[in-house]
Length: 219
Image (cartoon, rainbow, N blue to C red; front, side, top):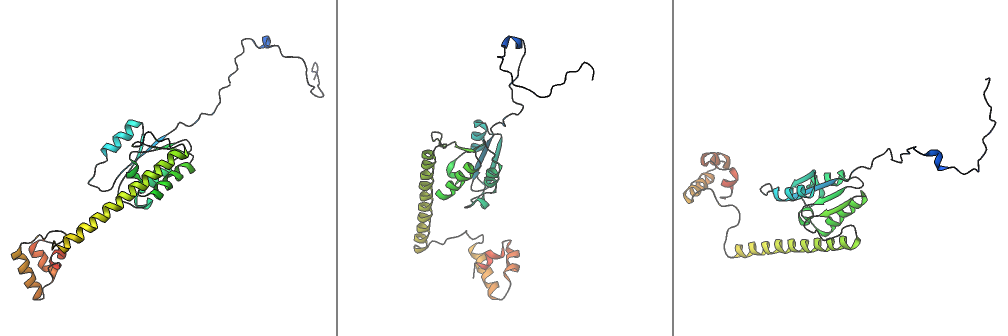
C-alpha cells in the first residue's frame, strides 16, 4: 500500500514515559465484576405446633435476616428438622447463618458441632443471637459453644430422668397414668357388660361417641 510503513518487528523502547503526555486522560481501574453481598440466613425452631415462633422470628428480622427458615418439630436429627437442613444447604461462601437460640437449633453437643462444621465447610460464618459475646470465627468461641451444647444436653437428660422417676413413683402410689376416661363410671360399667356379651368395641364406641380405643381400655 502506497505511503504505508512496514515494520518487520517491534523493538523495546528505553525512553521514560512523560506523564504530562497523559494529562486529562482518565483511566478507570474499576473492576467489571461485583462481589456478591453477604446474606444473613436465619433459623428459628420450636418443638411443637402449639408453641409460637414470633419471638425468635422478630429477633432474626431485627438482626437483618431477610431469608428465615423455621421448624416446628422435636427432631433429634437433621432429618427431623428439615428446614434447618435446607438452611445449611442454602449457605454460600460469605453468607452468615444466624440462629435465634442455640439450644433450639441443636439437640446435643455432637449435633451442634456438626452444624458448625457444615457452616465452615460452606465457607460461611455463624452467629447465635442468645450468645452475642461469642466470637464463633475463632476455635475458642466454637469450643465454648460446644461446651454450652454439652451442658444443655445434660440438662435435657436430667429432666427426662426426673420425669420417669416421677411416673414410677406415681404408679407405685396407685395413680393411674395416661389420659382420663371420657366415660362416667355408669357408662364404663354398661360398656364392659356389652363387651362381655361379645359386642364389638367399635359398635359400643359409636353408641357412646368415643373412640374404640377408649372402650378397649375397659378390658
